[in-house]
Structures are given as structure tokens and as C-alpha cells.
Image (cartoon, rainbow, N blue to C red):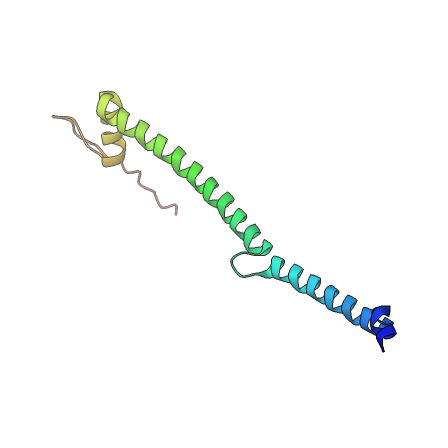
Length: 109
């Protein structure tokens, strides 16, 4: 009996140990890929979301700069303010009148 203990593991035991180790490696890899909140898939989703947010942020910064320029023009450029008031709001200067000319369509007999 002492001789068998010194010989080590038989083929069946070695195969079982290899299968166990392989199963543990596969399970570990699956956990690394699919772990909720910490896996590779979550990592890639978060990276994609960050790219989208960065793009949205750049777009909003550009729009903010355009609006800041518009505010600056409204505060400092009287001609621009007047043109905008006339075109957008239909405002008139003092003693101005608007004439609307309508074309009549004649009926052909």
C-alpha cells in the first residue's frame, strides 16, 4: 500500500484534475466577459456611452458659443437688432406704414 501512495496519481485522477482545471479556467473567462457591471461587455458599453456623451458635449459647446455670439450681437449691434426686429417680429419705425398688395386672379371665360 505504501508503494501505491508513492507512485502519484493514476490516469483517471489526472484526467479528472485536468478537466476540473479546464472548467475553472472556462468559468473564470466567462465571468471576466459577462460579469454584471464589471465584465468586458459592460466596459465596451460604457466606452460607447462615453463617446456619445463626448460628442453631445462638443455639440452643446458649439451651440453655446453660437448663442453667446448672438447675445453679443444683440447687445452691441444696433443695425442687427433693428433688422431682426423688422424681419422676425414685423416691427416698424415711427411714422412707417406697411402696404400689402394683393394680386387678384381674374377668371377666364
